[in-house]
Image (cartoon, rainbow, N blue to C red; front, side, top):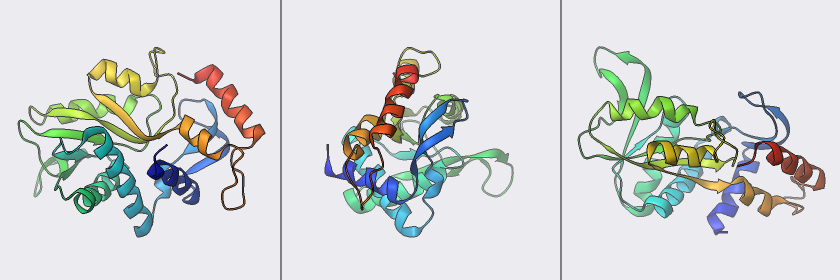
Amino acid sequence: MEQYKQEFIEFMVDSNALKFGSFTLKSGRQSPFFMNAGSYVTGAQLKRLGEYYARAIHDNYGDDFDILFGPAYKGIPLSVATAIAYSELYGKEVRYSSNRKEVKDHGDAGILLGSGMKDGDRVVIIEDVTTSGKSIEETYPIITAQAKVEIKGLMVSLNRMEKGPAGKGSALDEIKEQYGIKAAAIVTMNEVVEHLYNRPYKGQIYIDDTAKAAIDAYYKVYGA
């Protein structure tokens, strides 16, 4: 596993973005872990988060894109932080864009925040986590309505590796099948377990035998 992935897993734990226990998801599933990107709230956290996203995007897409699109609302700071980090790490200027929940009809009018889009633009969508793929159903038509753009793919922070709505594969796999775009993550839940299982981090074991058994049981039902 790449060093930055190991560091990102520890960063999620340090930031209290990744928790272990018992959590009820929007889908109604009882999950033994929970990831919340809303826990990244400080300047230092957002700077590091943008750097991890930038590295993962560079690994998966290289420099072959022009715009980072972060769906409102959590995607807005993600796209901004990552655009800054990408410029600093790789010397490439990429634009950030996001959608408004309501169309603005004066001043900076329209549905987009940040950069507009033009024919030929190449877009990477950036989100926190995808469990069901519902957010991409809302985001895809917004982007494609703006211009004849090429959506290079989707980048999330954590691949939960759960069945998507169609039950054919993971949510990320189903997105690839339905929309024809690559979907990737900074880390997968398998990598999280590999790194933290019975391994002390700052004097604490986050995934012990009990937690590992709960995760295994969860994936027997919902795993892709």
